[in-house]
Length: 125
Ligand code: SF4
Image (cartoon, rainbow, N blue to C red; front, side, top):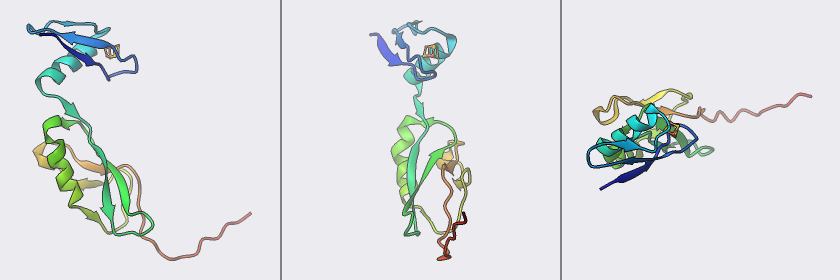
């Protein structure tokens, strides 16, 4: 049985076929072959989501894994992330969860979040 994958390595989006003998066709470069074989054997994804915060002005902040993790672990990783709450100022790139599920990937913020200070903001001309 032939399996078809859309290669997402570059914007060209080739349709790559892999047959039962792991012969690959349709790819326009070697990266597509590697991608399709990885998809067949152990698909991985970057997990992009949000984490709860205690800040009223930003109740959730965006985050992602800093590298792809096995697709089969995405729900388990989401469960861990959903148990987290950020209660202090943090910055883009800061690690929120290190080595999630022993994947070697860290969950990092993709946006900075600052504790509300109740300071008034003045604009100058
Ligand atoms: S096979 Fe190569 S050219 Fe085609 S989408 Fe993948 S990376 Fe791009």
